[in-house]
Amino acid sequence: MARKISIERVGEMMKVVLTELQNAGGQARLKELLPRAESKLNLTDYEKAPYEKSGYIRWQSIVHFYSIDCVKAGYIQKSGGKWYLTPDGEKALQMPADEFIRSAMDKYRDWKISRAKSSDPTHEIEEDTDEEKAVRQTAYDQAVEQAREEIERHISDMGPYDFQKLVEELLKAMGYYVPFNAKPGRDGGIDLAAYKDALGITPPRIKVQIKHREQKLTVKEVRELEGLLRKEGDIGLIVSSGGFTSEVEREIRASVKHIETMDLDRLINLWQQHYGNVGEAGKTLLPLVKLYFLAPTEE
Image 1 (tube, rainbow, N blue to C red):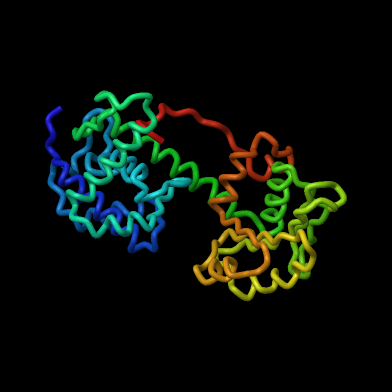
Image 2: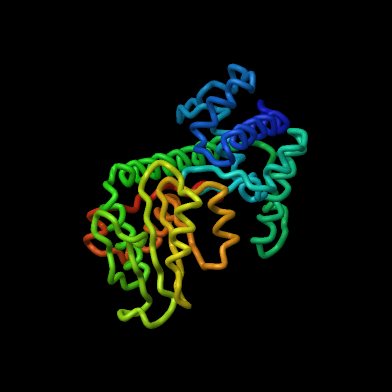
């Protein structure tokens, strides 16, 4: 079909959306970014109009569609319905809009060619926005985002001890023995202990600290866990549903002790990955079901 939105205009849209992502701290859901971007794009009636068959807004579907170019270019990452701006993406935002989108398309083309057995012309990226593909990508992205939001909301509504039990069930599904689960109340800083064997003889021996709250973990709490990792083969795991500040991440990287982190996004990804091994107690806490969609262009 004839292009009514130029590739240069697409570049403007993608740059504004990614700039809003940067302003949001480098991570956000697209539905949070679109209203902010819309106010800055001076959209035409054609761009704001819905596609006739699907009802999806044209400019928003174009953003979904060209986000794949940005992913393959390494400018953004997507996980669980959220977008994450990469360091390469931050650098790319310094380019003019036309150069920005064409660089993403070129990198996507290179990626396609690298996957193909030969670099024949059928693997070239067309500069026209295919409405059907744009709509399919939009539907897929929105379904992923909605599903992840529902899972996150379900976990957020859990009490602290149910959340702790959820982490225990995940570790068991990953093949660990969990001989210790601290009861509610003061626990000396350790909520769970997980071993590779039933006796805890074979390293690693994981000491788990769990924080289920909106606030991010503090450096003080990291240092408290560091003090509990006294034996060779001890590894610390901090699970924080509220996430981690940049100061905490720097503290962990600088620590001489081996400490791993698990935020809500990583917990859900691991839960999905190992769901086949989750016991009935775990599935009662967080039941999931597979739902199949027509695959987007590239994902």
